[in-house]
Image 1 (tube, rainbow, N blue to C red):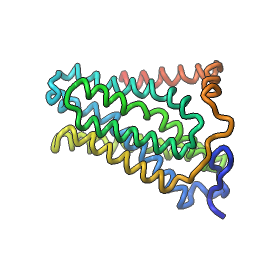
Image 2 (cartoon, rainbow, N blue to C red):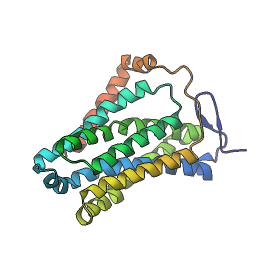
Image 3 (cartoon, rainbow, N blue to C red):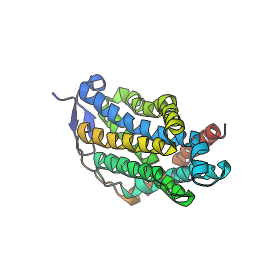
Length: 241
């Protein structure tokens, strides 16, 4: 029997050992690779400010707005994409999000001036939040009920590893090769993720009954707003420090 099987709403485990099976490990690796790419560009961009600021003819405080442009893209993109893409199959959506992310970072690597850099970083941030949301759902659907949190943590590990390995490498490339290489490498990582997702994440169908209006209906729940508020305060404090 295969480790997973398809249902109308997505993918569910067909074996209690699915979390340790070869195919499932490849799925988690593919999803974590996307998190690694996103984490690398999110934090490495800060370390590259001293290098791209003079190249774009701006001072470092102004270059900091480039980081804000990416963050704005994350904030804007996550809810909009979640609503508009509600009827898409998750595998297709993951491929589309990482393709968009790859294009945004590739364009950032060739940005001719400050204005274009701001635009390209904003575009790069749009898929950020939606990717993690969809990747977490895919990982959870794949895992046995008692180990879904563990599966999601494996996906998020890509973001953690990026801060330890990806960011230093991107910073080193920025110093040795040039700041544009840091964004170019992230674009390559995103394309690798696209290939891995296409190869290892099974085809699925769009969630039954999904609609943009139904997605917006969640905003009527006070629990949702409390959760969003707690997350905003926590992450806001983290980045302030």
